[in-house]
Image 1 (cartoon, helix red, strand yellow):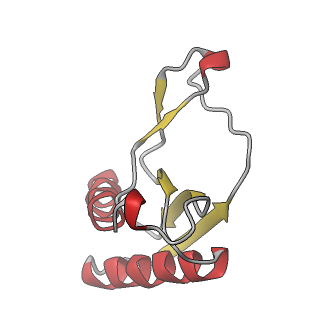
Image 2 (tube, helix red, strand yellow):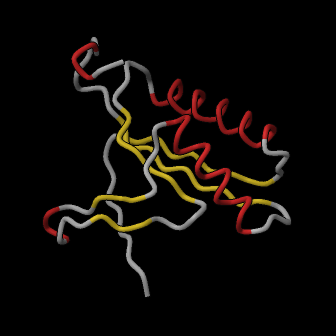
Image 3 (spheres, one colour):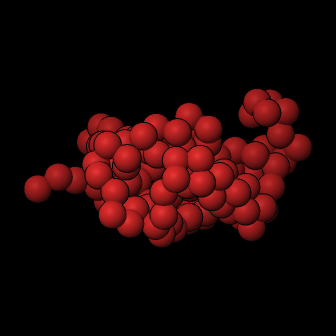
Length: 113
């Protein structure tokens, strides 16, 4: 669905997903991350505000983010992401934990030290 097709053009969410895999090698994290990035149109970088330099900052290999502009409530958006995540875990034969954050306004910090 393109932005011009939205019924309510103000409906957009910031989505952040993070996961932790049980007993998995780094390569398994990257494969799952690539799958989720492709299937859910998520980014592996977070774009900082102009006040904070405006540069993209790479997220940890178990974290993805996006600006999600769809006609759906926060709960519907979360449920959609959860369904795709659970399917990806099963398809990759992985076990672990995940967190899905869906919000309209937030402040974020990302850096490397």
